[in-house]
Image (cartoon, rainbow, N blue to C red):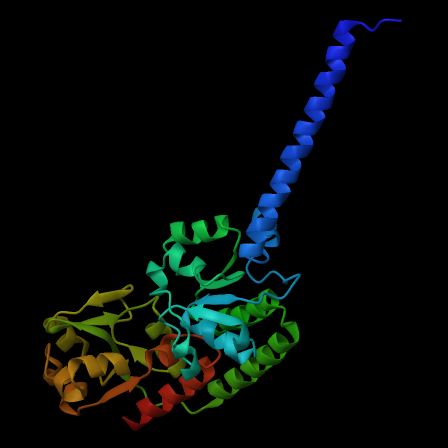
Length: 317
């Protein structure tokens, strides 16, 4: 019995189509496997990103190569005992001292996808201030999991970073212990004697002969609040350049700044010799207090210690 030629053609078309589909499927899995060999964990990272995994989502498999963007986050990684998995950080990660020896990817707001991917991470833990966003998007598109952590200037934000990072690192037990220690340390900080009523001016960076100072909604303003003193520029928003006239009108009792700023201007005397400081109580009494910038403004696990140090230094000024 002879076959219908059209039936023979249909069978041949079905066989060839099936082979083509199988070939494409195998090739796709081959490409995915190749990508995973270059960047282990990329497949699971892509799935997490597609599912909209939130910051601090528990890690199914603890990441082995971590890059951190943000000084406070770097401190938390060490405090959790996970520093052995760090392969790089941005330049704001300066504590503990051992972190300075790690490869750097640049400043947190100006990182590049190339510098990040060159370290072959399977997890990037970043401050929400990290950027530009396009660089982080490129890292995600390469299959790397990126977790962003909000930067608020309060103890609850620090606690959230601790627990969220512990989950992302698969170190929940260490996270619970660190969070409990932070709560205890914060209660102790709040019980420490506050300085006498003081009007304090925070100087971030001199601009020519006019200082850049901190108003409300800044980390410095929050720390002055926790220290129990008054920010003399508390009615202004953010950081601003202060004119000599406005500085004299503010009449600060103490000038607070960072060690880096003080070193850059050449010491307390040089700072107070500018912008009308000599006509203020702080200038006349040479009252300047400085602390390490990450310690004072990082809002990491050392935040309670920083509040205690600030209260004591202001009281002794």
